[in-house]
Length: 499
Image (cartoon, rainbow, N blue to C red; front, side, top):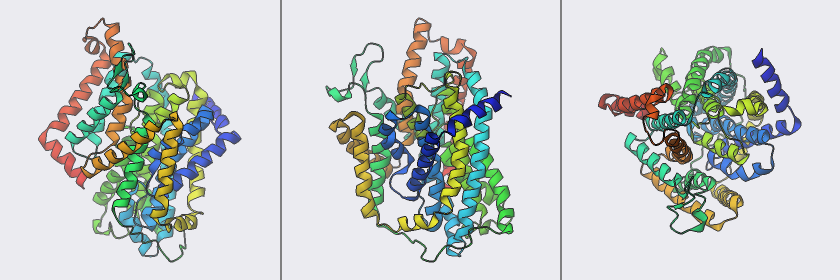
């Protein structure tokens, strides 16, 4: 009965006029960001962080969460209509979605993508409501040693699930930890790695790093190649799929929902990898695999369901343990910190209205996204006709204004350009920036819990192995690392990512 009372509390908070409006704004902006290339949810959330200063904490998080899962919906629109995914997770949708559009079946492809996403998002949100309280209750037994071991496990998991090579993923994590240590010592206040620059005394600005690596770098990558947008000239008719389409899609939607729900919880790129895993599974289970890549509707239904299920369940470790499983959730940690909220299990007990209001808003947001996406397809098509040479100056301006607004410092704008070119260079060399951002967020938290652990144990490192939960997490982390380092499994991992 407690869960029903908590859900009633959450829906009561989410259904306030202000929060409903913020949920709609987040879903609409997220869809727009997903449709238009060159920005993405990470940079958008980073730019909008200053706006959340004046908002209620629940309303701010509802809006930012809506941007995240709204972008997952919008990315499928460009993937189907233009063969250009608005989001990384929508890349797989281009394979069969655009082929369906070329065959005059863009309507059913868009409808199945939206309906499958709605079902998957609804089921995944239910899992958040069911699993979240259990994890939060278990996390009450966590102390500094357990949190350090859990964060270490998360970073190792990020290297395993990174699409780049294992060595490059480790390098990115080490760079992220190094950048996170810049600033003042958390205990003594002594400057570290500031090189005498006064603006670095409080560390590198998280918004500057995120917008540079994911916003400015994406603009540079898009400008590198000439535009090739094959927007469909013929009108889109017949949005409703046939019964045959529905029968073929239902098993794929169910399997994609399951895959996405599981992978979304994992640290690293679990939510991003979910649609790829779903597409591979559907192709292996199909009676005629040759249909895939030629307009198989299962190739749209499965990945889109996995995509949105993973986006929703990635909130579980954030809301219950305070550990961000991916780069977007790292942005949400920043948003919660700005609002004076410490992510972790105490959120559910100390601020149940925030916890359950967030969960209720996910159901509302998923319903809004179905309404936003299908009727406004014509609007999105017209937006896609806008040349990118007109878009990128506005995007770049928003990036600079958003970064400058945080501290009012020109140094942040200069650092934005530095991180932008760095992110572009990393992408050209095959390095993935997501592990770097995760390590940047988790690094200071790991250091804080490590030092607290040594203070409790008077400098004895055995505290990490004397506590059963901490020992179990460390053994899991070491085991995961050893498994990945095995040559045979490492080759299979690389083959899976190439596929």
